[in-house]
Amino acid sequence: MSISQIAKSIKPSPTLALNEKAAILREKGEPVIHLGGGEPKSRAPLDALIAAAAHLSTGEIRYAPADGIPELKKAIIRYTEEHYRRLVAPENIIASSGAKQAIMVALQTILNPQEEVIFPAPYWVSYPDMIKLCQGIPVPVLPADGTFYPRLQDIERRVTSYTKAIIINSPNNPSGAAYAEEFIADIVAFCEKRDIYLIMDDIYHQLIFDGRKAINCYKYAKDLSENSKLILINGVSKLYAMTGFRIGWAVANKKLIEAMTNIQGHQTSGPSVLLQKAAVGALNGVQSCVESLRMTLENNRNVMIARLRGLNGVKVRQPDGTFYCFADFSAYGKDSNTLSSFLVDKVLVLTVPGAEFGMEGYLRLSYCGGLKDITEGLERIKWALDPDSPNELYLGNRKLVRDWA
Ligand SMILES: Cc1ncc(COP(=O)(O)O)c(C=O)c1O
Image (cartoon, rainbow, N blue to C red; front, side, top):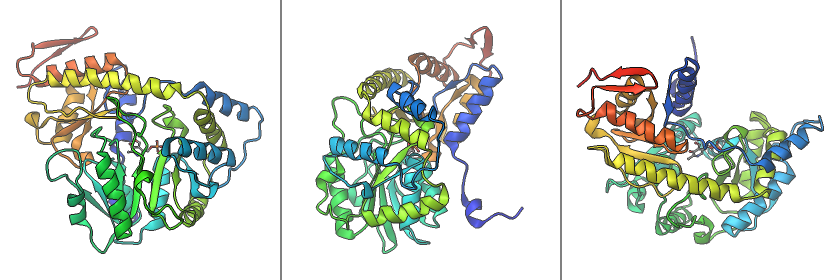
């Protein structure tokens, strides 16, 4: 079959593939534990459901403007004012079908073929393929000091005349690292000085722990004019447990938003009006659900970290936010794909191989599920990996026998 060069260069999304795998195993009645997921298990906020239902009941579900309905833009303006202390105009905003589309459309708007986009590793699985879809060149940067915290000098070294943008995602998927305020200040200043687009992927910005405060990139921007090359990405997926609603947005200068709107208009048109109404409900509704999710995640993180630290040979840094742990399992296998498959095959626990995030030997484990899944999942992993484990393990009334070294 003849398909394009671009299509050939794109890998399937490993996290979506994993969700499918979990669903198939569950359908077969297998007692699978999914520690590979990227979505909170809480229900969507009632305000979101009511808002969508009210619009649905009118029976008039029409096309939405390509850049989002005015009501959602108003809610995003309020959100940006509250969380970023910045007043923007409706023309500075585009609502998209998820933060994923907002990032994709931003990249399509700024990239010419062969232009480079730098981002620290470990990175969100989609960045390299999104950049390739725009015929750009992904440039991942591993922190030279072996931590999950990028340093400006490591990024600076990779900047060339082809560098068009830098993507920063903090708190970070998959490491959970919240980058230091000083680093954010430096990268904002650096991009301004070098006239490089800075895409701040803030999708997890309120999900931070240990009393940390979300960092506001605008605080360090000297240029807040319509020439600013700062693009702020956000959405309702993670904070409000609304992954399936597919609403995200970008805040940027008006010319860029206009160009993004042209592209999105031909691509998908505006996101479904029903789902935009739901996002308005979430953003304008009772906000205690965000804090309640944050506290649950912090508690889940503590449980997961304590269990992981009980696993001989596994090295793990405590995540500062998000709902992921990125643990070094290289003592049990250098090839993370093989190790991850082994854990599914032997003990029905799904994890995401570190290779997908640009770091071999690691596994990403999510703590966005229930505590029972976390504790049982890690017990199963320990049983599978620890050579001193008892020979048998019962999953319900199914007996597993440890017939490997
Ligand atoms: C870092 C990062 N950015 C963006 C997204 C996309 O979120 P959305 O569901 O709004 O498309 C995700 C989702 O996993 C993510 O982890």
